[in-house]
Length: 162
Image (tube, rainbow, N blue to C red):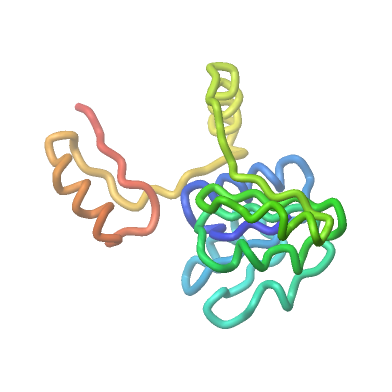
């Protein structure tokens, strides 16, 4: 699987889940995030600012886009026949992908209690880790929002309750 946006919140979890089930994982990232994504378990990390992943990867089973943009419409170039391209943010041109023998889907999740229980077990066992960029007390919720929206931190902004 190739995961676009391997350092983001969803992408980082996707990298870890894919490795947990035994997949070969390639992911895109840039700068300091390259080492972070490699430590999450990605077998290959491609600096998307310097390289075109569609020229470097071939014959993948799946592509998971957590970012959006033009890359999703080019992902068929790395997928094998009968591969699957899934986007969290784009509505794929299904006909274009079918021309290449690939299924393209927009990700839609219905969260269940069972799924959350399974995820909690993976977190508690250390299979999944989440990068925390900043912790603030609940009383500073407005500051937390500014930090998050301003892109001033890598990782999750966590509000703590005393």
